[in-house]
Image (cartoon, rainbow, N blue to C red; front, top):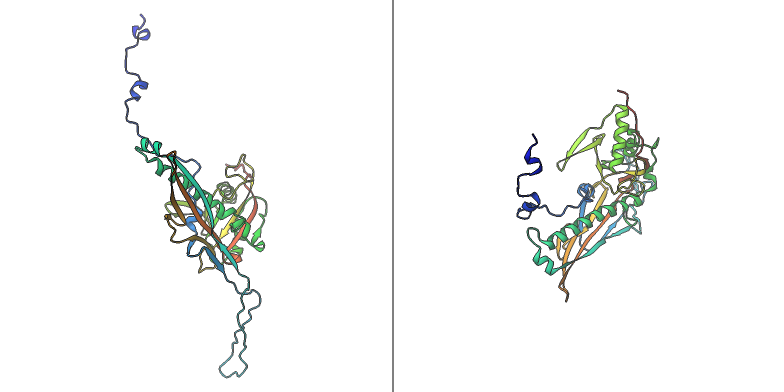
Length: 318
């Protein structure tokens, strides 16, 4: 006998109808392209009062003032001289990254529960500006790490892929208290494969609640701002990128992040949010700016491993 309920199902409230009365739990706006932005966290930062940072340097070469080592009975002449300086030191000027956010006040009034529309727009704009800031710290023609590293501090990988030997060469370039490597996640994966192949898996360290691979005790920090063939997200498995080794800190004559201090409307380091007013159509405008730069205090504070191949894979024997 056939089941009568098959052709005549029991009437019940449908999910689509019930949904109309449900109190839906919502998240705030999810921004998929945001990253942890580790580079600004690992840099030392200096607040400026005038937006200009001058790097005074001693003229390099033979030390002009020699110290005379002698016994107490030696009557030789004490050498005389002075320490000379570069007469045209480099000055770093803060650059601004800005945008304007427009919000219809009527929309903000009607649809600001549970999330304030103005606050959400500003929050997302700030996140976008900070993503751009990290990109500029790496890629800016004016002050970025890649473009301003000294020629003497640039090396090529031995075999194309990033190997432990290449990382050791970087350390030989930044041997005075190196702080961290900076690399695209694909480059870190390629380095990991080379270490696995050699049987020397990198150790890990924990910073800011996250684990990072290390080499010789130096953390390897991921950043997608070191592009692979010009892309944050490579289109294929192959590609070329760069890897940096950085020493940070003013006292260590390393790399120093610069930002403006005491900004009107300042909300965080170098960031200002200013209300511009409401026009006749009821559109409220907000001006957002991040002021930043980056100074390399000594040539040996940064080294670059150039044209690193991230597409080499191995079939490991079981």
